[in-house]
Structure formats: structure tokens, C-alpha cells
Length: 226
Image (cartoon, rainbow, N blue to C red; front, side, top):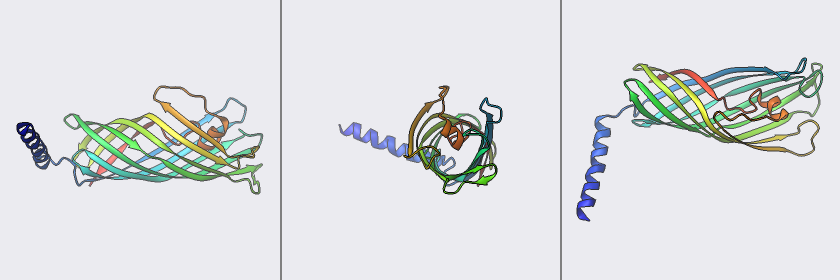
């Protein structure tokens, strides 16, 4: 028993010693951003929607290959003629998304990483008919959930990398208040895995854009280290 305890202690000490000799990115800050644009037509003559996402991300490596960060940004959605002729919905959403990342080296400057994020989204949708706002018609939206993604990160220079990620699983809880034609809050729970097709309710598509959710499935961008 004493030998096992001694061997375990030596193994732990060796692990900490190795981390000290190879600190990796511990103590390094990083900055990146998620930007995107989506648009779609719903099959009718004039029905269409589009969404624009601007989401800066800042993080800090608390260990050689582990980082914590937060994303704060905005999503804007415009939906036309999906609730009736000449009806336009304009949505402005605030996004706050704490996240954690773990990196594994594949070869040289190529790394695989896993990310777990907790997106929290809130905002309003303004309803206009023939270009005029409808009194007391603002739709209130809130959404929170969990998003698991994986990706590849290639280190180009000491301070610059290129990364690609894909959303692997997403769980979200959405509450929509004051939606036209309803008397109660609309509450939805969505769970999706990669490569699984789902049919999105019309109100989600109208408010969150073509995907029906604020989580973009595919992301490509640049990351700066400092």
C-alpha cells in the first residue's frame, strides 16, 4: 500500500514538473470573433428572413491547454411577410456567452479543441405593418442553453492562429412573450445533434432567423494571442 501511495505521489509530482517545464499557453490571452450572415426565402412570393451576427470573444489560458472566455455581442434579424402581407419583424438580441476550451495537439502547429458554451440571449422584436410600428406589439425574447462544439486550430505565428469549428450538440430553452395571435407565453425546448435535420416552428424562424436558433452551426475565423 505504501508503495502505491509513493508511486502515485511521484506521478503527480512528475506531472506538475512537466507542466512547469512546458507551460504551453498558460497565462496567454486570446481574442477572436464570430461573424456571420444568413438569409432564406420561405417558398412564398415575398416571405424571407435574414440574420447578422457580430460576436467578439476574449479568453485566457488558465492552464497550458485549457482556456476560459466570454463572448459578448449582437444578433440582428429581419423577417418579412412571414406573419402576413406587409408585416415585418425586426429583432435586436444581446448575446452573452461564457465558454471553456480544451486543446489537444495533433501534430506541429495543428490542434484539436473542444468547447462548451453557455449562451444567454435576450432582446425584443418590433412589429411593423406597411412600414409603421404597431403600438404595444413588441415581442420579448429570452433564450439560454448549452452548446458543445469541436474544431481545429492551426498556429500560423506566435501571435496568430486560424480556427474552424462545428456545433456538435445544442440544448436551448426559449421563451417568447407577446407573440401576435397568442395569449400566453410560448416556451420551447430544443435539442439537436450534428447532422440531424429538424423542422423549425415558424415563430422561431421569424425571430431567430433561418436556423431558428442563435447558435451558428459552422464557424471559421482568426484568433490573436497576446
